[in-house]
Picture 1 (spheres, rainbow, N blue to C red):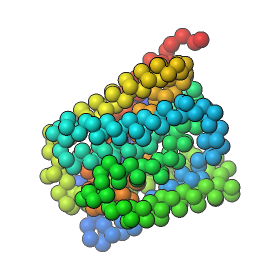
Picture 2 (cartoon, rainbow, N blue to C red):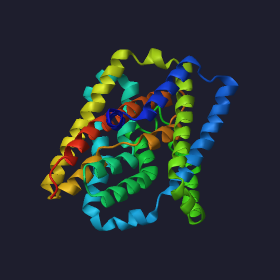
Picture 3 (cartoon, rainbow, N blue to C red):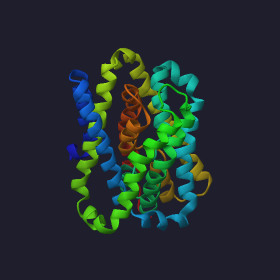
Picture 4 (cartoon, helix red, strand yellow):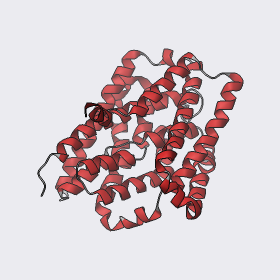
Length: 325
């Protein structure tokens, strides 16, 4: 029982990612090996978004349109509140984490919501599960188009950390959009097979993410990542992630209550609107950013991912213990 509770608080995959970062720090890919991993990463990202397209049911998105107020609030938080917080808190965040990690925080704020954990916590907390499924699926789909545009707006197309607009759009179309559409088209033939093998296919997602993290941190280490990011900035980043999450949770709960949503819907909104997707953020960073900047961009989402899991696990457990209506 203790180990089961621990798994609710800590994502085991995080340890794999931390091990990958350590490996990249001690044995970074260089020269030909770096080129090999770069191409392998491109292929892995294309496969990842092909599988996203094959998994995502259009019916899940269409079915939830009737609950548009709930979804609109979640999307507004994911794609408006988070980015605004990243901009408004800049005078506080930048001294704590430095200008490079601040850009990573902005990237975090532009990401779509998670799918699996938002649904899992809503289910545990006895919220509106169908609405959670629809909202999470739609957020994942919208994020493919909206997140890159938000990143370009938040950071500025002329930023040293971001590629130029034309190049970014080309990469998004080739590496993300075309594979995703191909997966949607192939769903007609492989949809049932994908549904039967979801547990096994999770390994494809995680392997792709590990490849991206190793390649990204290898580049960053080769360019002196750990000399650019002092320990004090990493501690400051933990504080910033906790602060942003706390503000979002408080604002979302208050607004949902003022708008008259019932408890089940408020639970769904709370867990759907406060999440940011590591699974989408890692491969998308490889497409949007260049060189050693990728490793720095990934640090905030890796920390925020674990913090949101720990906090939301406690909240979901508390909600689950309420009396049945």
